Image (cartoon, rainbow, N blue to C red; front, side, top):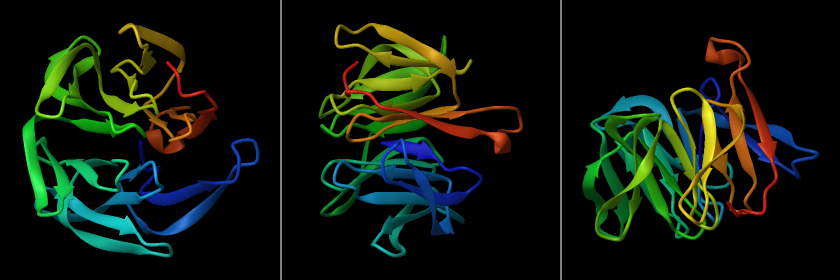
Length: 215
């Protein structure tokens, strides 16, 4: 469950969607991921090997984590999976970072542990879409530029024209209303999109919708 940060400022949404308020957190970031157990990590703004520095939320501030990336998400066990500036895909484990096969430009993880990525091969809609099978990435029909995964393991994507789509259990893509530049799905199935009102993107707003997590 991941979402692009707005203007580099780290914000946390609390309370219900209907009464949502934003809480400004310390630090700056370029990407954020939150696991099913609320383990939160961000990609910072300072340059390091692999992209930008990584930080884990420890209750009141961010604690630096070895490594560098440009995109990340967090699995149900609290482990980050990242894409670095070279497109390499890595996940953290007991012995450090493990590089996985393939290249990617974005990554999303569902509350059930399902991992999906946007690849680097151009196709209609953006780039190819892949699902982790435990050893390698299975190619799935479709194309997109941003991805996240709902609690049942179904991907939600935004393509290169801003269309929002989610994959149904029968393998079909369902187009949803509106346009966006990014999408994220929480562990409870609530989906959020970043909606460009006018360009530049600094004028974007964030909209949310409650779902049952099914697609």
